Image 1 (cartoon, rainbow, N blue to C red):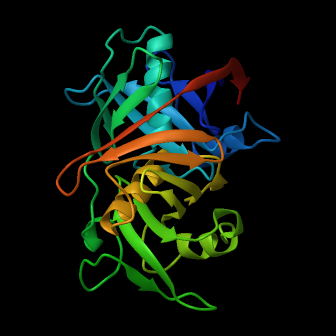
Image 2: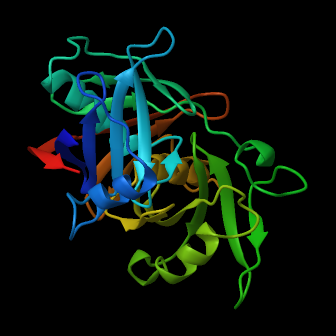
Length: 275
């Protein structure tokens, strides 16, 4: 089976994008893992699949982590999705409506080439994240082998745990992040963000992503971090998020309102692979 693909990146968070409209794409978990492998395949954090919408939206957007598991949402991927469908002539609309596992999102291509995405309203109810807790709270204590840690738990269409740290460079992202990702209180696992406040309009962020490990950037992780920071009284409503791969601008006007994310998306190369 030969597949045409496009390699893309949003702030270094990299993707293999497949057109499931003009070619047949039917991959099992092992094949997805092979495509994502940086030594034996193309290499990516996630695989993105463009499909025909099942409802009234313009497209359907499916996301698979490097371990082959399908997930609900990916913010950097959403921006790459918009760039892809424009560059490949699948739409001429500046704003499009896209079905995801977590609902419909509506990204918009800006005149300067950046892409703004309405990421939807954050979810705090534990059963909807999902997160095991007796009631909704601003922060939670999470038991780990060495000592408990304090987290904020929320969903941006996918589950997130956010930790506030004083020094992002020294944060135990690989070790502690892996423990939190697999914690029994997160039935579907969780993305783990480490947030350092620079000032009320600027943060630094590192994220350990479900099924991928630490990535250079995470769009939904940036949204979750800003929401957590606003709720904790640490941040204003519009924040620049500095990741290892670059910067995103995140805006959130508070409870009941959606989170808006603006940032770049870039095509790296295109090719064909024989599976």
